[in-house]
Length: 127
Image: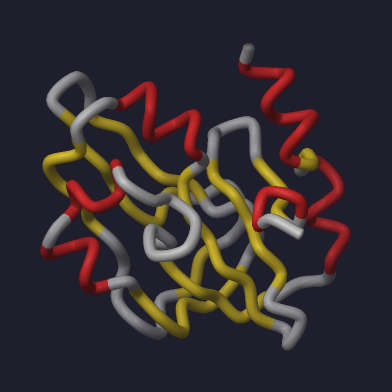
């Protein structure tokens, strides 16, 4: 089973992967990265930061545009992909395996995920 069969996507192009231990991996969808083009800058939050669903937790810039990155679920940051901050262009190669942005511990219940889409539905919504 591929990773895209396990993720949920937001209308603002973030994905959420349930790590099945109360934590979630968050990143940008392949569609979002394709639209941005060559990534040149990435800003991610500090460990321990807490965000509510819908709040901006980071920023990304490409040669084409700059954009905020939003939380698909409320949570506390427990891991940050520092490698991507140093080499943001790697996001253009792989958004799922090595291109995740942060890992969070959820701070509310799963009902927050009700408005997230399965990957196939998300892909249909953006094309």
